[in-house]
Structures are given as C-alpha cells and as structure tokens.
Image (cartoon, rainbow, N blue to C red; front, side, top):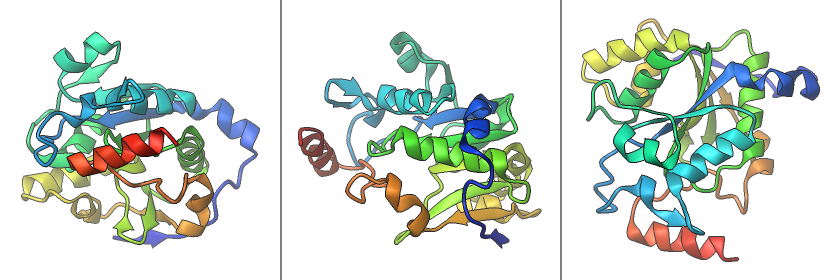
Length: 220
C-alpha cells in the first residue's frame, strides 16, 4: 500500500480539539477470545471491564464511542453497541462494520484488549486525522510492525476492505492494499513513544498470563 510520512500536528491544538467529535470512536469487542477462554471484553482491571475502560478512554479523548460486538452483552453496561455485520471475519470485519455504520468521515478504531492506551494518544490520533488531507488511514508502527487496532480510518477505506473480505482476506494490511489501495500514513515510534506508559502502549491481553501482568501493572 502507498505510504505517506509527515510530522504530526500541523494545526493549532486548540482548533483540533474543538473538532475532535468529528471523529467517531469504535471499540472492537466481537472476537472469540479463544486463547483467553472467556470473553476478554468483560475481564476487569481495577474493577472495570475492559470494554468500559476502552470506551471511557475514547470519551476522555473527546470522542463518542460505539462497541462493535453483541448489543445484548454491552448495552446493559450503558454502551452503544452494533453487532458485526458478518461475525467471524476477525478485526478486518469489525473495521468494515464500524466504517459501514459510521456517520463520520474519520473513525478511530481500537481493540478492546489494549489496556495501556491513553486519552492523550487517542486524541493525538484524532487530531492527526483531522489535519490530514493526503491519507486514508493513519497507523502507528512499533517494533512488531503496523498497529492497525489503535488507528484511524477514513470511510474511503470501506470499499477496499470489503473487497479484501470478499476475496478471503483477513489481515488489516490486506484490506488497505486494495484495489484501490488506501493511502496509509505511518506514525513512527519516535512520535508515539511520549504517549506510552512504560513503553506498553500497544501491549494487548490475549492469555491469562497477559491478564495477570496487566492486573499487576494496574496496582503499581
């Protein structure tokens, strides 16, 4: 996919923060949680389910959040929820559902199992999208590669993602590759490191061991 690299925040911060509600926020919570053995979204850290934590982080960043997952599980928690249009298609299917149901051009998408995300980081992502004219998706890059589940996507990506899903694609990078290819802006570690708590920004919870570590970190 095409890559565009520019520095963050070319617009005044005050102007961007006032516009942040123009970005819709989504929490992907429709996964099978097979490695955990139970629904990760309802695991609690410091007495709060992960799905509520993610929605609260989006709200604290100045955006409205919607859960992509079973409404019968998440609406009783006071959350807006939309079921996956086609369950079982993984995160790429969840992103497609979010873009299809969004009323906004730019859309912040986060996985429910990323407990170290911060409001400041999500606000920075939203602000970058609002200032951007030349990209269709903005993804951070870590030592593991692109981090597509803490990223922003323009609704222009919906067509390419649906095409990839129809061809059997399941990786987010396949969805962005098109055709037509989405223009991807990468955010380098030097730009997002200042938002990370102990360098853990994109560490997720997949297994009981991961959960125990996150719970211990929460008590520090």
